Image (cartoon, rainbow, N blue to C red; front, side):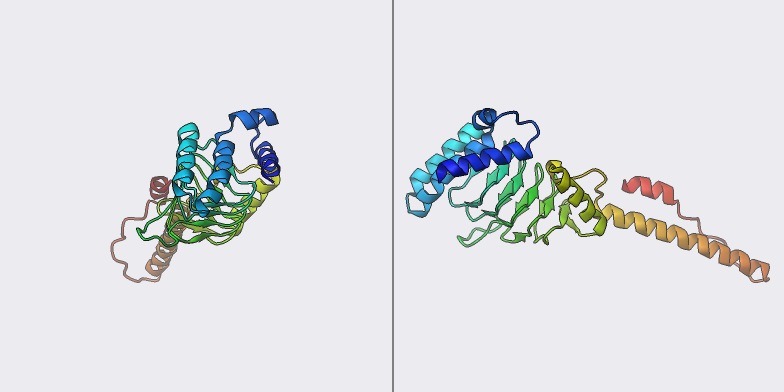
Length: 248
C-alpha cells in the first residue's frame, strides 16, 4: 500500500509540474514528496498515541524539507506540495484528494482550544504561494486561493478567493478562466492572467457608473437651459480616468 501511494504521488508530480523530467528526479529532488511520505509514517503513530515519536518525525521532515506538517493533520491522496519551503499545516487541518499547495502557504488556526481549529480543503483545491488560510472552515471542492491572500471565512466550491482579507469571485468569467486552466492541466500559483481583484472591479464599475450619470446630468442641464430654465453653477465633473488609474 505504501509503495502504491508513493508511485501515485510521483505520477501526480509528473502530471502537475512541467519542470519534472523523470521519476527518479521526482523521488530524489522534490521536498513536497518527501514531507508527505514522512507524514504518512508519522500520522498513524500520532493517532496510536506515540505523540513524541510522531512529532520527532515531523520535526525531522521540517528540518530536511522546510515543510512543517503536524502529524495530526489529515492528508488525502495525490496531494502535491510544489517547492514547499515555508509551508505550515496545522494539527486539525484536513486536505482532500488532488489538492495543490505552493510555497509559503499556512493552513493555520485562530483559536487556542483543542477542538477543530484549522481549515478543511475539499478535493481539488489549489492554494497559491504565500496564502494564509486561517480558521476551522471549509474551502469547497475545486476552489482557488490566490497568491498571498488571507482567507478567514469559507470559500464556496469552484470559487476563487483573492486579496487581504480574501474576497470571493464566483462570476462566470472567472469560472471560464479556471475551466480553461484545468483543460491545460496547469494553473500556476492558483491565479490566471487577467484575474482582477473583485474590489477593484467593483470600484471601476462604480466610477464608470458615476461618470455616465454626470454625462447624463450635463445633457439634462443643457436641455433645461435651452428651455429658459435656470441652472446653478456646475459642479466640477468627475475625473473618471484618473480615479480608475488610482484603483489599478
